[in-house]
Length: 385
Ligand SMILES: Nc1ncnc2c1ncn2[C@@H]1O[C@H](COP(=O)(O)OP(=O)(O)O)[C@@H](O)[C@H]1O
Ligand SMILES: [Mg+2]
Image (cartoon, rainbow, N blue to C red; front, top):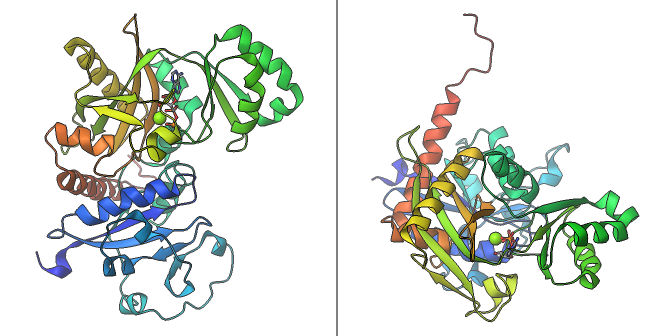
């Protein structure tokens, strides 16, 4: 394919969440493996303040470490800054790439958001891209927002007849007035251990396993550092499994659900931030999961149903628990932009199901383009019938 016919894919990386560094790892892999015979890659980094920078200089380096795509604030390379919304546009400093594309409409055709967590994966960036009428990979605004919220997603999944761990929600305003009453209520209604989590974080940021009432207050107060809503769940003694779901290439058909993967935290009480990212040997990923074929099938059906119940598009990783003893399947959470390093569960599960990392990236970009084409045909005006 000729250079000018290639689809220009903007890979968004970094972001304003606590998972900024995780995103750098994922994006390093995505940038390296997008099929260059089909795509031109336009890396765009979002710094922790939310400004977007053209990151084409990443190609000058060998991408051996995510540190190499770490962002430097350089006003000459700035593409967008949410601070600008509502302000009179400033004159952009000349820059060779921006200059080069001055007369074309955009410097990319489609966006691949490889950013995780709050203000990234939660529908905010997706909303911005909708407003800008740009095709983007993955779930739309609604599914992204719902998927990020551990309270709302659980309520919808529960409504579809799928089990979720018993949980309670605490809003910050109420907590500050009634902290002790909440602790008593939790102790009476949920048995220990419980898991305390900010309702909208990922990568186990702010997640604490609490074994007795004495430790509850501190855990909840700490979770409120990350969110104004906190969820407290009954701990399930379970095998943790994860499934990768990919929208079908044929519009309207069932999505492809991967084989089942199992997570076994090693030397960690649960799959914490440390087990995920700080300790190289913090967890084992077992594919396929060491569970019966019947349970695998049940898990795959459950994941497919959850993808549809939460209105997902493109991709999602569905995380489930299988309770030891009862084999009951519980929904834990859904990730609309799962970890995307080559050793992350989502790409590994897809690979084990016959879709290579590069092929997966190609499919996701094509799905994004197809959805945009479909939606652009919808009428926004009243049509008399
Ligand atoms: N109700 C629960 N029962 C048992 N373990 C849990 C429960 N909730 C969370 N965990 C443990 O905490 C980890 C992180 O929680 P999770 O809800 O998946 O948050 P995150 O979105 O940050 O990954 C899980 O992978 C699991 O190991
Ligand atoms: Mg999780």
